[in-house]
Length: 252
Length: 315
Ligand SMILES: Nc1ncnc2c1ncn2[C@@H]1O[C@H](COP(=O)(O)OP(=O)(O)OP(=O)(O)O)[C@@H](O)[C@H]1O
Ligand SMILES: [Mg+2]
Image (tube, chains in turn brown, red):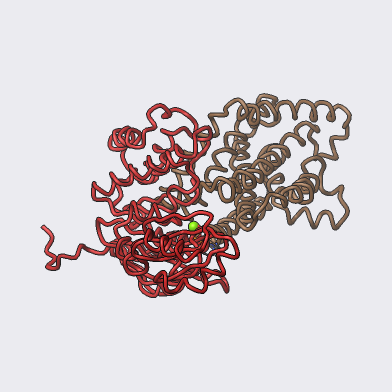
């Protein structure tokens, strides 16, 4: 598969900067979890509000999906723009037998690999902390990776239409960050007004967070199919539109 | 042995009525050309003439808008991967992977071409020697000089031992020494039988490297031939370049047509096309016209371009 060649190139470059990669994938979630979970958790006593679990468990499981979304979204911005606009790496790749599809699928696969490297230590830390004990919980890793990968695909598709990075400030300020807040990561969405709940149902992170929690701290229920379906569909749309946008951009 | 009866070498690239449109803009307008195996073929033209657009269509990274194009006997849209496996591309702007070292750039590219490691490794050593980057193998790309980056890009384009090498302005922006080094390497490739397609807006580069060339201007091919042919066809053997005061220009204007075959009035200079520049200069001095400076030189492709289009190659 030609896409794996793109994955290999990216992982070589990624692990060369292993210190920052290690920090991102292991240390930062630990710090975040301890500070937010333990600090805030000690203030939040009302367990009923979080479905009968303590706040650390509620927050940590939400954060698994949320940090994958954020990392996935980011991986579709500057790193991809760099290869389209500034360094033109893709032009070099396209002069070889690889095609646009190989590039797009390679980048999406790379996002999945990178997010697995991020989600796994995060998951293990939660397991050590005794947040869950169901064997099904392990499936939270692929779900969190799917959330991030589908966001990566959609944002890569968007990046292929941009000529400068100005739009990213807006994207993160008005799309990614609000998604964080509206998707039930920090508090259950039934705390939101009705319009907020509608918006939440449209966001990928809400479905990801719900699915992760069903697999870890709540019971699995039939809505899981709908959550999973949403995420798979988003990935599908991202890939189809992304390949088309890449083709228009890279093969003018 | 080849069974071909004619002595004409096979055509590696054939274009007929080839067009490229970007929206309303016509970047390449119905061009016809043919590049034969083993030759060094040039596209000479000023900025915006459509050279890169043409090269990208040949390199299968830009679909033609009309006309026909065959590269190594194949269709660049439906058989892009097969074509790309057999050509090398040196783009106008270096697009090396700045996160990787010199050697890794070549290794990664070998992987894109599915070249097995035991074939790739000796070839990479050879290419590094060929482009004289032995001291830089483990260096990152960023700190390399412009000339070194260009040579690395050429080495990368040769990783698949291509039949056809496309070079888009291979020496633009390099200092004279770096240019000569690149020319020398390209000349060696030509000797080895690699077919070269070169775009340039330097007439000296075209004269040095190309067996045959087309002159492009405003999306069209305006003429075609070997450098000496074109010079013979469009120019006299010698050119007399004069710098004159305004008075002297006026005086010269009245008699110039008798003194030379053709005269070009440029803002800073006057060019007189003549078989013997010295005789013409003597005649001008005899007629009492003062010159600030006078230079007799051999005619070049620049003069060919000026004759055809009325403009200089490099504005
Ligand atoms: N992707 C594109 N989209 C729109 N217009 C383009 C695109 N690429 C090239 N053009 C236009 O097509 C015309 C021909 O450009 P091209 O790059 O082929 O010229 P060139 O001969 O290579 O010039 P130069 O010497 O500056 O490299 C120019 O007017 C250019 O602006
Ligand atoms: Mg160009």
